[in-house]
Image 1 (cartoon, rainbow over the protein chains, first blue to last red):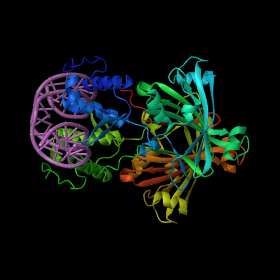
Image 2 (cartoon, helix red, strand yellow; image 1 turned 60 degrees about the horizontal axis):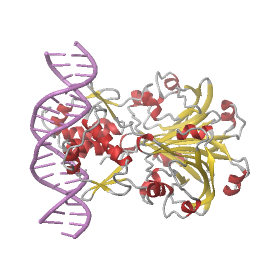
Image 3 (tube, rainbow over the protein chains, first blue to last red; image 1 turned 120 degrees about the horizontal axis):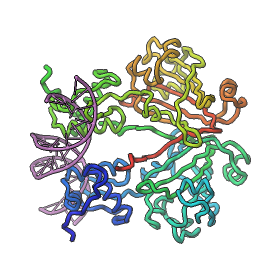
Image 4 (cartoon, rainbow over the protein chains, first blue to last red; image 1 turned 30 degrees about the vertical axis):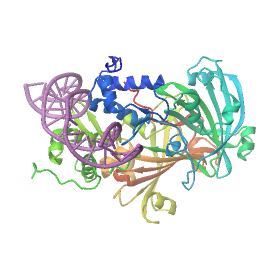
Length: 252
Length: 252
DNA sequence: AAGTGGTCTAGACCACTAC
DNA sequence: TAGTGGTCTAGACCACTTA
């Protein structure tokens, strides 16, 4: 029945962690979709049989992890990946002078493939698992600056097609969310010096083999489930990869 | 008198933000030094005339920003930059296979200089302001992988000497903290492809002009005061610059 | 006006640490 | 045992949003 309090998993040690895990489970089960509001705090407190304060502490952590977003007077929402300020959470290339702009993305190629050993390790699939592989070029201020090669497991992206990818209305992560119910909530990135392939050199206006910034990313959904592998090559003549540590919200 | 409640600045809008700012002010005034415990929550709540819950919320945020560290049963401490797990908060170079190790640092040169226009802009000093400039080489697994050129304003580091720098017992940021009362709490970094100078090439085992990973860092103390400018060149043949986004504490 | 999240209180009890 | 932070309660009142 709806007024009954849910049984919380006994793992986690504390009430609010149990509540948090229950909320994560509900999110993973798509009980509420991206952009939707979750129930009011009072209702959730009743549902889980805890006080408001405890329920709020669980939501506090999910908000701190950018999984939920609170809006006073409106409600608490499942985070979306839209063309708003949150976009730059995952997009870290800015011009030398600090100017931030949205990239113009074009699909260069798309194909079905098998996971290589390295990609399989990163995506936690078996080697040779069916994947989709596609390449984007990204232009900033009218110039192609980034070429990214993306691999996603077919298991999580059933029926992904080149057409759907090409015609998506918004950002890639928003597309994952709307079309496949996959919410990217965190990433691991490794950055090093790489070399432009012949294709990349052509797109980036560099010689084949020219040094480029190589960014290797694994994107994760809830519960640290890897959902995307991405290898980007960036022409950093005019652009930088930025990485702030713990810039607080200015504290006042 | 000691039992009187302090007057809190009316700015900030909420009680806990006022408390947080008062704590930041006390930290900036070195009322408690790096590594020291601040008073118990109950005492601080009395001092600021708020309830424990409100005081805790202020400390919660300072802990989230790694400015304070709580230890259950022990107390709450001013964050230190020691050779513990917190070291890797600011040190982001790891081997390709993921192995993390502490660098062996050697001072290559040290001199007094004037701030260039670019450095002055980053450090928010006037152009030509007196600075110390020094270069370190960092070895990982016995091989020099990083050469970093560091600039700090003389105004904030009075009487810094090459000897003191060379003989410091711990990490550089711990040295800043112990000897100059400067606590590095956040950094901004920009990463791009750069070129090894002749000196750097020699130290890194690369040809002069070879492509290297260039990391430009500005380090900040409380209230976003810039205290150090640093330009690092990294040989990324065997090492990566890592950058995780919002990897939660695994959620229980 | 009604509903939402935001802040704050004044405790209680628990878990951990040091002596 | 005494002192610390960690968790949790059961509300109150405020600020914001929508209607």
